[in-house]
Length: 311
Image (cartoon, rainbow, N blue to C red; front, top):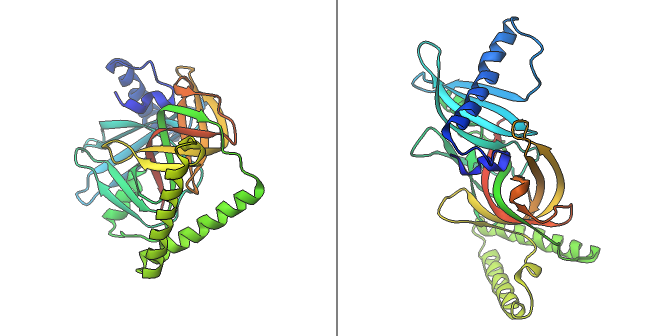
């Protein structure tokens, strides 16, 4: 059972037969019913958001991705391939959250994972400070471009989203308008220094080193009398041994709730600004401690996913 299945409202799905029923529904509503509709044999289907995509690789193996929403923008993706008789062969599934905000326009590297036909992406965005490693949601466009030998491709953008099974709502750090502008200016200047340092500018590297030493000294002095979360506004840090898990703290800029249409469990969707980057997080309301509101902060461990917009 996938650990983050509960994040989209399936906290009570713990047995294989219940999971198999969900997988069958995804396959039926994305392949079978759509085929009937396209052939004119069935109309007025129940409303749902479903996406299917297919691609053949270099060995003419046809892979398929079947997405079906069970809440607004969140659901289950089933992946597999088609045999010579055009029958779908199920391989594996994963829960997903479909984001709506572009998080980065930096170049992305894709690598296949070892145990199955799934992929991880790596994005080096100077705003975050670490290399972002995410689980690739839309594998099929990548395999299609790879089969056509059009990779690497420039001009992509990245939409990041995340699922969480344990989160806490925290109050914001009080800042006036002057402090907000000062922080924004300092962040822009630091990003410029990081960009220059990546180009090999020794003066920029020295400036960043001295700035980090000053920040470390200041925090070490203040931490004896203040809580760390009153000093650190947001953060984005790797968590545990899995490369696509992160511990984050971000400011909530948008929020809405929805119900899982099968279980009726309430799911909370939050758009966060974390280290000057925007991403969306989905969490089951029973796993969220505190009352989420715009302006407050979300702290938790998330499984990071990414959707690449290919030009």
